[in-house]
Length: 224
Image 1 (cartoon, rainbow, N blue to C red):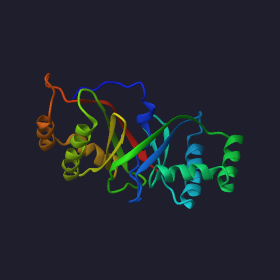
Image 2 (cartoon, one colour; image 1 turned 90 degrees about the vertical axis):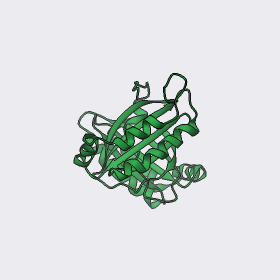
Image 3 (cartoon, one colour; image 1 turned 90 degrees about the horizontal axis):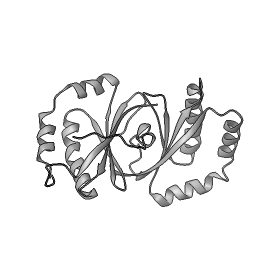
Image 4 (cartoon, one colour; image 1 turned 180 degrees about the vertical axis):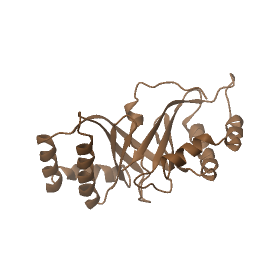
């Protein structure tokens, strides 16, 4: 597979926690770069925000990546649910008090927001789990073919010990493999998978022998 670098690295970094809610279909993900020495406070603030949002009936995931950036994801039943929650935050006393608190003592700069649809759910993750995100972008193929390829790979990787979820946005597929620990993640990477290699070789290719999509980024994150 050809790997190229994307200009939107931040959108790939931080957060693809598989929702614990069976009803969750979409995610809004904010990405943060902690100020110098304030990574612990950033995580503390995210935990406070999670308590507020979960009290509103929203599932939340928090992660950090190996470069020290943090992500905060809110999971919703659908886009309308997302809209209702966002609209209600302006009149939520707990959220307004929290916003005032962090404005007085900020801990991080928000660097991006990403909104994704959950296409294929995984089994869920817990604090301490490790995920690897592979981001595919359509080239000469179609989004339908890309998703079909991802869904075909899912059971192969699950037989090899990964927990797999798939997200999407227009033109891109976010393929997430999750593991109980860094050791399990490393063992998965160390172990050859002939079944997966045969599957990849069998996928439909264009006239030049290339897949209709390329990998534009891979990143590893830790769940909190």
